[in-house]
Length: 342
Image (cartoon, rainbow, N blue to C red; front, side):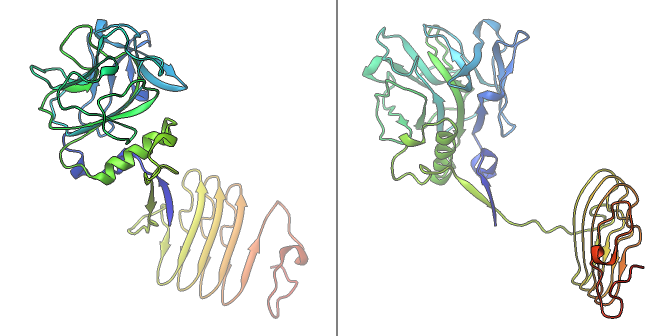
């Protein structure tokens, strides 16, 4: 069974309520291409926006990754969702300043907040002494909860507690000069129905994507490799598949084709197998097989093999190149017909 990388699109719909996924690499920029005006929600519900030019965050690359780059100085830049929601868990991939510094100047920096905050619906830090908001103990890269997270290189900072409803966003604060300092790369929020499996998949997915998987706990299920999902084989059914591909009984028709109006009449009946690899327009218009015959063709060009037919247990293999093949070259062999080309 095939596998592919797990993505946020695989999160069950029941877990998406009061949540969102914002990949800052997809930021929409101002006319000068320098500042972020919006970041789509990958779940298509609540984008982050900032219509006020003076509050828009510069956009660029840090460590090779697209990012919102908050100034390494006190600032008031921020973004928030268009509509209100009530998250119960969130994570932001971020770095504080250059990744090695402590907040020695005691400036207040907001990781995540509510634009409509009138109380303590925000997560703020000041210096290495920890967080100003009572009871907040963040988790960094699925490590132990702690109110000390500095210094902070590119990492995933997580929070889980009873937030109020509002227009939440990274660095969002109703106060001036209390926004983040340094780059932010990605944010995700989940509502109260989230599961541990979903959280761990986000942790593994983001840790491998942004290069800090080696800082996940040794016991983390996705430390060694990102999460994968298994994809079951697809079995098509219905009419008019591949403009006229028909199969009945135990027939199998397999085609790899490219172009326009390809395989308009490929048919197979009984236990026949018709296999074609074609390129171009109007190829193999009448390839047919009956009984246990197998007809195989590899053709290139237009209007080739219009009536290739095999009956009984005959096997016909053609590779036309603009000339009639000899008996030895064609490989046509059957009792009574050896060496004959018809």
